[in-house]
Image 1 (cartoon, rainbow, N blue to C red):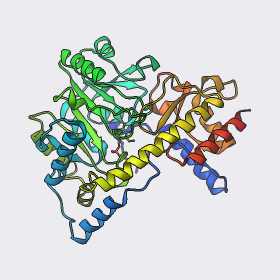
Image 2: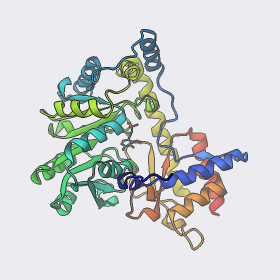
Image 3: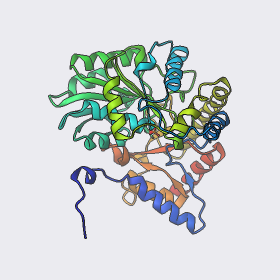
Length: 391
Ligand SMILES: Cc1ncc(COP(=O)(O)O)c(C=O)c1O
């Protein structure tokens, strides 16, 4: 018997990279060596002090639900992190522990978006955002962004593109797929422009900690205590599989988030929350700093190597672990767009990359994303193989 699938679910399209992944797997099964640069996850394992804390939690049978808002000690540790790391005061009351940034996006969109209201976001941007909006019967107001604004939404975009239905602006800094960062002045201007429209500002800070050249991404909370700020243990802290993130809400929003969390998922994973208590300890931070430096080296090696084989970069990304490459100089009749190029690179060079189409529509056919989540030697080998395949 065929059962109807909701329009809501049907509207959630699969990622184009899944196609590439399936082909990559098939090629690997035939014995081909594939270099994976499509994966948005650090190749480093979770730091040992965090794993040890997780093991201890299990040995002590910390296997029951925590409060829906999260372990009080973890909420406090995050509040302390804002104080020591950013010099920003946020009470633990305003911190909600979530199953990844994904859980935080679901909570915040569920709490703020009415049916038919729109979330303004940058195109290109993180693809799941539009799906979260759709899932709560909202829509998106996707604003094309270019290298001119370092692929970020600006106050000017907000003013020009806000319409009657738009109620939220969502930015990510550093961004996925472009790795660009908003500075304090830009965040303040953005916040003022959103306030002017009586909207809400959501800032996804999941790649915080992964910034380079002595540049630190400021938290939006430094300029706007009314912003909804999302973060996660996935990327900088290397805990993707533990499914843990957080959301900082303005005063007065804790209770509604508590109710939503209780009903949508009860609580974030308990052992992960205990493990994450070790994330802010100095021995963990030392390991993470070393990894950050490794990622910076990789970026600095890969970017010129890709330029050499014909990709172009209008801006040098200051964060995350992605290079958003303009591939227009490499396109031709046989390989007319970035999707075809991704397929070609996989087949001819054994290198998997993500086509621009996964991040939106604007100039998507001219861009692909490279994740430098593989060691430097392999990254350089990838660039060399690509060069050979394109000659
Ligand atoms: C910009 C952005 N936000 C949110 C997420 C979700 O991450 P998680 O749920 O693992 O914290 C990702 C994952 O790639 C991302 O790139």
